[in-house]
Image 1 (cartoon, rainbow, N blue to C red):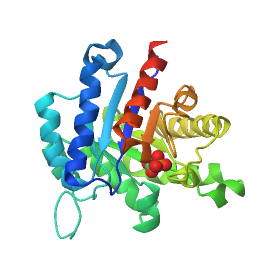
Image 2: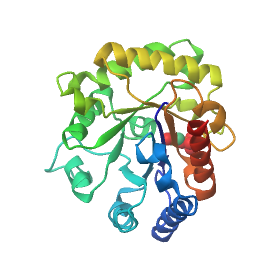
Image 3: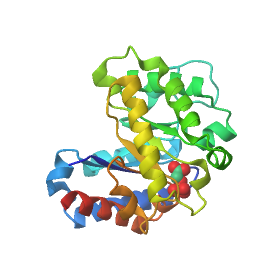
Length: 267
Ligand code: PGA
């Protein structure tokens, strides 16, 4: 049985009350459907993550603790230093101290709008791991890169540089990394990658990661993943879950995707 992680990326969305409401609705879904008693949830084969904006992490982590929720929280980014004169930034140690488990690193919106490079991303991955956070390391090609046949070269470069700082890190630490393949052209467009594209690209990524780290890391798919295409995409052999933007902002849609993941593992 493979592992599946269903992760929501809330991006810069939700008002404070909406964030709490969304959490409560997801939590109610888990309780009403007795998720805690599902064997593959108990043994961590099926995991759930939500990545709200930084400002809500502390409140939501308190709610997670109070309800002993199955939902883990992740940040959407972090800095690579643990403290210092970096106005506006948040360090991995701060996140860890709040009880946060994951952090997205290198999302395409960070690369595009905040000039993140493969080099800074590689430092962040190392620093997150050293702070005992699980990095969700995002990679993906633009439409132009796909159309000109450069997808694999771009991904190879992102993977090679992104993982370059952690080659000497202990295996039990680096085995915690989660990769998210998010074709830039599929993010927020309603146009997910096709089954064939996801199958081929995930296989390529799997092999590249294995070549560099000698590890089989989980690979999530992201980019217009929703309740209508989740069944087809999450079933694929090298797909270990999804990083979900738009559809994670509606509890109904997010919980539908969770239900689909549950039924894939059950059968
Ligand atoms: P989307 O976003 O599901 O809205 O396409 C995914 C992401 O950016 O992580």
